[in-house]
Image 1 (cartoon, rainbow, N blue to C red):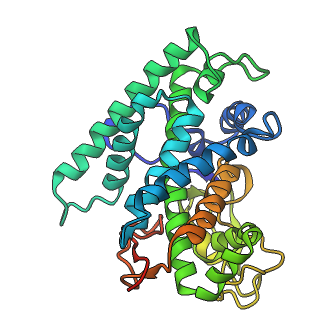
Image 2 (cartoon, one colour):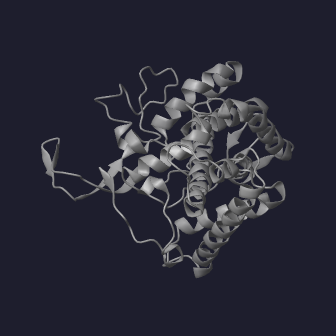
Image 3 (cartoon, rainbow, N blue to C red):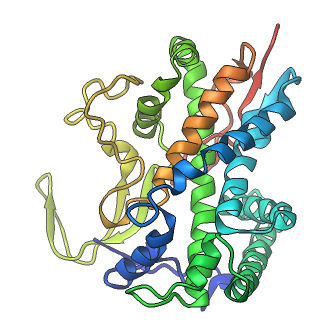
Length: 344
């Protein structure tokens, strides 16, 4: 299947798209160039080398809410965590991080914009944030070319590998992909994970006593309550037959990842949350050539976040179940996840 080009809002007209929206061979070339510096096989120690920083960031965020009787897992913890991590990965100066947090929040808020009920300011802030983020990243790429460091922006800006060198626009598009897609995936995974654990207190108690359980638990979470439910805007390369139905060449297709991960023909008792599930080949990060290239980092972020939340929060309890969810049919996660802790 190939991606369909969809018109972006006016602010993005003429802007280089990220490789996730491209077809081979251009997609493959840009993905290879990004992966040379992002993870295996060329930098296999990247994620493990970040673990101490991930743990320290998680600990600092929990410290900030440790004494509160009521917290919002999304606003107080899940939202700030991945943006901080990706800023460090890219090599964004620490003094610029607050701006990146604000821009990412404004962009994510604008994705669910409903002209019937939301003020236009919500959309306008997202439009401006995209422009500001793109301009700032472009400036950082120029700086890192003359003053390189160990960040991903500098590595991409100064790399002359077998596929050549990315243009500045391609580097900016790749960095934006990490910031936006990487942020939303982890925010939703952490929020969905805490919600699922609070709905399954026996699993929460088990995780507290068996920290190694977090690895298969996050895999089951990616199957059972994934951050991304649908991949829209694909098209069939040729006529294909699925379950006796012919899909003509060029037809628009929506890939229902969440449905596939609960297929009873593939997963026994698919609606049951089971961290001991075997052969758990879910679609939580997609599949094929567009498999999420940030998946290893998102996994480890979620593993560390859930382990520390369960270990350090005192007798956490849901305030509302179900919590309020975002309106997006594509991205699945609570807008807020209020919990109480301590005696109550």
